Amino acid sequence: MVEALSFGVDYFGVGDNTSNVSHLAVDTPLYKGLTCYSIFVGYPKMAQKGIDDSRLVLISQKITNPTADALNLALTSVLMSDSSNHPQLDAFDGSFYLAGSDTPFATVLVPGFQAINGSVAQITQHLQISNMSSLIGYTQSTLQNRSLTVYLRGKGGLKQGSLPKINVNYNQRIDLVGMLGSGLDIRMFY
Image 1 (cartoon, rainbow, N blue to C red):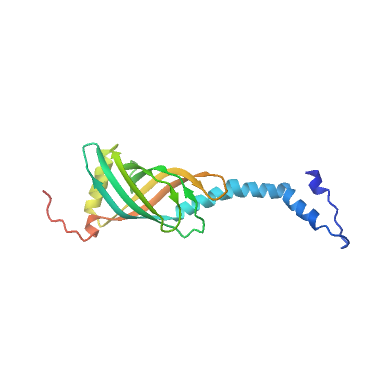
Image 2 (image 1 turned 45 degrees about the vertical axis):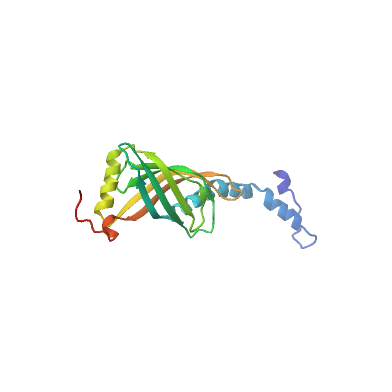
């Protein structure tokens, strides 16, 4: 670091010291410190904020072939984001929770995709039911309400350009239309 500080400065305007000044700007501990801080502190915070500010809009949901302990689930969602960054999001295990519940009603493998506004994420999986009471609570809320809220929670990798890969936490609020809000008139169950 001593060489970075031992440059000749001509305070009287004689000579050209621009190359020495630019050399100083690159080699100072302050510059290196700010660069490291930006990459290792600022970048993860900005990436997490981008995830937190985005929204998932559920376009379709289909549950088929239910058994006593499993079902097939097909979901189509659209990512809504006004971020100017478009990182690559890695696949991750995501759990769906009914608002107010601490127990997930489903856990799925969310596929990796590039986070561009309007990106479509499709999930088609055979799921083992790990908590029947949570699934029943979700089903009852869907049938008995005009709207309901679920959360997708998990942790996965995010890679933006040449920056290092980091992990981000997902806690996405998803607002759904229940059966009573869909215009469906259920008068009798058999």
